Length: 344
Image 1 (cartoon, rainbow, N blue to C red):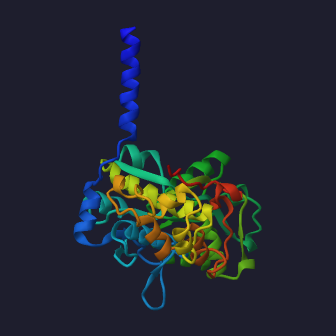
Image 2 (cartoon, helix red, strand yellow; image 1 turned 135 degrees about the vertical axis):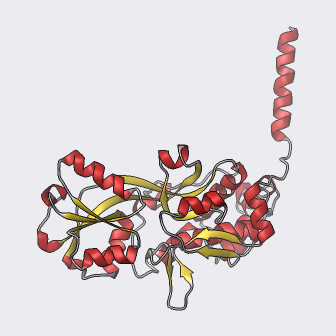
Image 3 (tube, helix red, strand yellow; image 1 turned 90 degrees about the vertical axis):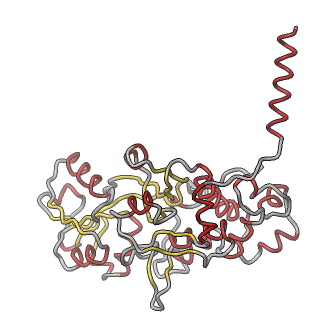
C-alpha cells in the first residue's frame, strides 16, 4: 500500500510540475543577437532567383530572405533588423561555426554528414524539392540514360555533386562534370552550350528555364536524383535557438492553416476564434516566455512579414515572375506535406 501511495504521490507531483509556468529561456545565440541588435543571416554570392536575389535598387528579396526577416522579427520585433551576408555555398558552414552568421537559411538540405560530422542542427523542412536535370532540347534526350558521355554543369560545394555521381553510377552512364561555384557562371556555362546537362535543385531549374532562356529550347528530364528537405541550420549546443527557428517556421504555417494573414491579423487578435489563436497572437500569455521572446512575437511576424503562403506567393508563386505552384510545399490540408506544431 505504501508503494502504491508513493507512486500516486509521485504522479501527482509530476503533473504539478508539468503544469507549472515555464521560466524564460535564453540561449547564447539569442543573447548575442539581442545584444547586437541585428540578426546575421545568409544571402547568396550572386543571384539565386526566387530564394535570395538582389533587386534593381539593391534590396534583398526571396523566400530565404523573408525567412531571415521572420526570425529577426520574432527575436527583435522588426524585419529590418537583419544583416544579409552574401556568402558562397562552401563558406556556409565555416561562417556559421565561427559565429559570423547566426543561422543558415540558404536552400540547404539536412544531411547526415552536416549533422554528425560538422556539428550542425536542423529545423523542420520549409521547402521540399527534388534534384533534377535539364537538357538542351535539340539533343533529343528522353532520360539521363540517353546522355552517356555528355557534360553536366553542377553547382560546387552542394549535395548535387554527390547526387548526380551516385545516380549516374546507378544507371550505368558516364558523365563529364563541369563544377562551378557561382550560380550565374554555372547557368551561363549551360545556356551557352558548354554543358549538355544542368543538374540542380528542381525549383531552381524551373526558374532558370523561365528566366534565362526560351522555355521551349530546354527540357527537364523525368529522372529524380533525390528528394531534399530544405531546412534552417544552426550550430549544435543551443537548443533554445533551434526552438526559435522551428517555432518561427511553425508560426508561419499555423497562420496559413488558420487563415490568418498580414491583412486580417488585427481582426483575429481583437476577436480570437479559439484559445490556441488567442495564445498564438499574444492575447493570452505563454507564447513567448518559454523561448525567451515577447508573447506577441508571432503576431509581429505575421503582421510584418506575412504567413507562409504570403511569403511563397510573392517570391515564387503567382505574385512573382516565376509563377510556381506549391506542389509538395503546400500545407497538409491542401495536398502538401508541410504542417505546423500544435499550440497548447
